[in-house]
Image (cartoon, rainbow, N blue to C red; front, side, top):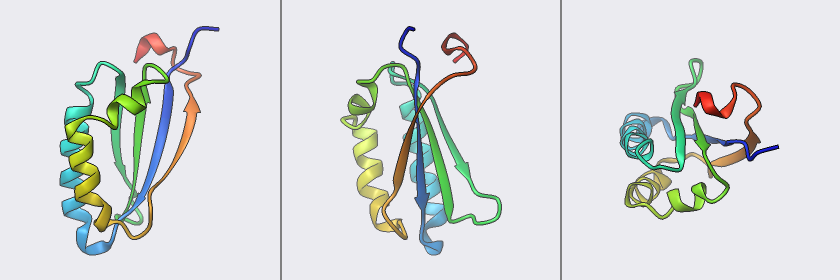
Length: 105
């Protein structure tokens, strides 16, 4: 079986007073992230019932792509900007894409 996309869900809980600033910083990071050759998708989702909760859905083309992403200037700026905005440390879960076929990304 060929290597499938690595999909990472990053769960973030933001302090209420920082929601707007977090969203703006995260959108700036996402806009630059999708330009990286190793990233197939970078989605920013906000919870409808609790707007302080976000999920970042990151789809990487190779196992090495997440490490390359974490070395970019836009990621480092995002990380340093938003860390103090979080109500608790962010968490992440890794998944293997099963559908749609990776070629559809």
